[in-house]
Amino acid sequence: PARGRPLSEALAAEARAIPIATLFRPAPLAGPGLEALLAEREAAGAARGKAEAEARLRKKDIEQAGARQALLARHAAELASQAEAARAAIFTLETALAEALGSLAAEFARAVLRAEPAASAETLQSLADEALANVPPGSLGALCLHPEAAPQLAACLPAGWRIEPDAAIPPGTVRAQVDGATVTASLALRITQLSAHLAGDRA
Image (tube, rainbow, N blue to C red; front, side, top):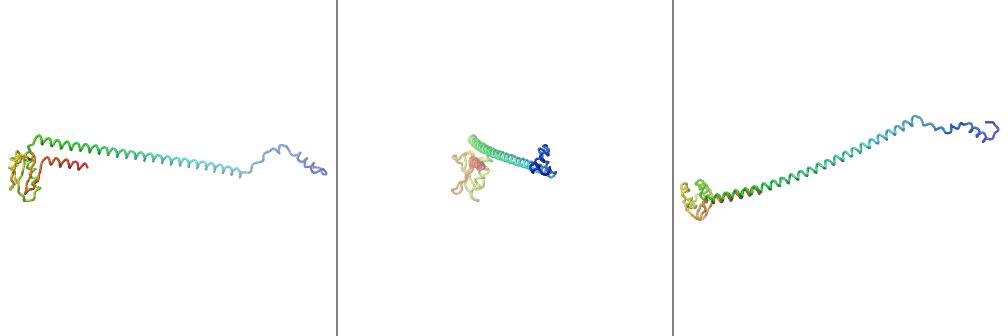
């Protein structure tokens, strides 16, 4: 600027000397350090986003695994309950069947006794042995039984014992009488004891 001009004019002249395009030129970005920082921040953000996504996936997998385990446990409990109910039902059926068969067998045996009152010599001997086994050792007395059965037992009568026929005694029954005491053995009593035994096994 020329000397002697007012300062404002000198500044104005210098301003007019600056190209207008220079005023609208964008400022240059910072050097390589800023680009590296931006890249580092972008990489950190991407890593953080990936980690968060992986964490969400792991959480979802854990929740799904827990739901599957709970479902399996519920199914297992239901199956166990059903199996227990089935076992109880089978036991009930088996018990009812055993009771029915036991009662049927006992009734059938009684019907056979009623239809065929005469017992064999072997059966009478077994009944006599059972009655004698329950009297005091060394006792002597009488074996009382139905008159029709008396001849079958006479051949195997123990020494010191006598036979006393009694029409009031049912066939298939032997009574040992010793000093006013009586011990009875009979097929009907055996059937009753067998039925009671079966009932006890089912209880």
